Length: 62
Image (cartoon, rainbow, N blue to C red; front, side, top):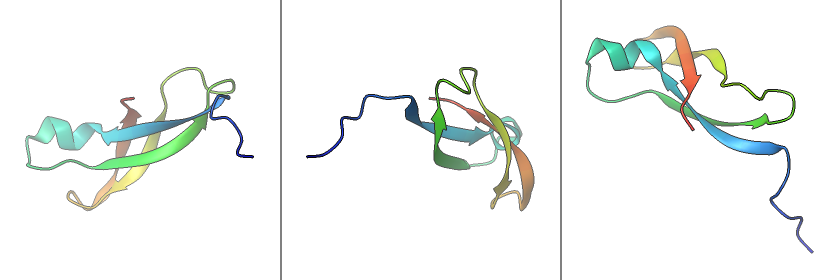
């Protein structure tokens, strides 16, 4: 049988903060998982933005 989805690991979406502020069309988003028990706060990770062609800060939106 399959395991139940209830647990500490949840799926989140990371969105670029610089791209949103620049007003350019489109958006840079990444989907990842985090452990709710170890990281209860929202994540901020530097990830690559292909539209701006540089590494920027991505914040958790969901």
